[in-house]
Amino acid sequence: MSEIPYKTYLNEDEMPKQWYNMRADMKNKPAPLLNPGTHQPMSVEELSGVFCTELAKQELNDTDPFIDIPDEILSFYKMYRPSPLVRAYCLEKALGTPAKIYYKFEGNNTSGSHKLNSAIAQAYYAKKQGLKGVTTETGAGQWGTALSMACAYLGLDCKVYMVKVSYEQKPFRREVMRTYGASVTPSPSPTTNIGKKILEEFPGTTGSLGCAISEAVEVATSTEGYRYVLGSVLNQVLLHQSIIGLEAKAAFDKLGVKPDVIIGCAGGGSNLGGLIAPFMGQKLRGEADYRFIAVEPASCPSFTRGKYAYDFCDTGKVCPLAKMYTLGSGFIPSANHAGGLRYHGMSSTLSQLYDDKLMEAVSVEQTSVFEAAQKFARTEGILPAPESSHAIKVAMDEAMKCKETGEAKTILFGLTGTGYFDMVAYQKFNDGEMTDYIPTDEGLAKSFATLPQM
Image (cartoon, rainbow, N blue to C red; front, top):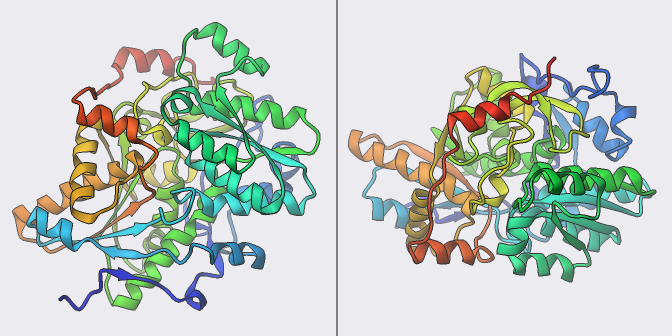
């Protein structure tokens, strides 16, 4: 037996007591959110019309490296955190690689993913502000599930707009949300003005995260006592998710190990940003160097084929403008099975880091992703979420490169959640019915043509 254990846990008293804000250490700060009407930077007051006031302050905070985690949130975290850092010995053996593979497992809670880390924080600030409830969107359903849990815990109403294709493909995750008291509406829907408009323009559409965001924002801003909360993309979400990376780094320090390569799947950026946060902080401060890889689906390649430009965060064009790598707010991705990665843009923080060449990005096709997921499930005993499996695929690729070169690199990837509610996707893969979709240059050009003229 190796001296390095299969699983490394922190003690409760070793859990981080503060979130880490990467932006404080960035030389080039992310471009500010802009008011879509005036094209001027958004203020806390303006953002407070959509978000809780404290969250609006966190969104715009570029200076404080550490922000205290309230005791109530820490108490909730202790129900499922610290999460384990796992050495993938069985996968290493199956691959025959000298690489050392670790993963940070975030699926050990009822929501089945990392999303609960930010859901409880955002629900807490809504409750503290005296609100009645919150609205949100969800893709694969993990964020909606996490938020419904957090709202049930705090006694808040929760209205979820779920991307239609996922609503239909993942009925059991929908029912978990309803069990926790949330109302769940397939998006786009005829219940909002924006939903009606999208349905008229794109009849029969399977929806997108951009569509669902528009509907949730419309309801939040037109309903007294409600605010909108988002599960990814925003600076505040990356802040809350930094607990993933902070725990991972503390566990590595405990083992006396330093990762060489850190890999995360990338849709809007929540888990990737959270995983890399403290390691990127070291790189930004010149204390250590790491190689960071963002992995996105070839069907929705915002980093690898997108434009770095100001764009709307939603299809209905009611949200602030964010400078990010984007495929255009009108881009409707194919109905691929990594529902949590079907967003047209990327976090402005991660976009700036990528543009500064502080991290890399690759896109992968979904059949190869599910092949990797199957290999992982058969060796490590966990059925991974389709989103997480993008990171697994590239971690395995990097491990095989080590096999070719003989290098014993240490690889860390984020296992963001479990795939037990994603059995329709696994069924299609097992039945040989899964296909790959890659958007054409012509299709992307049409979408880029709709970018706001700044």
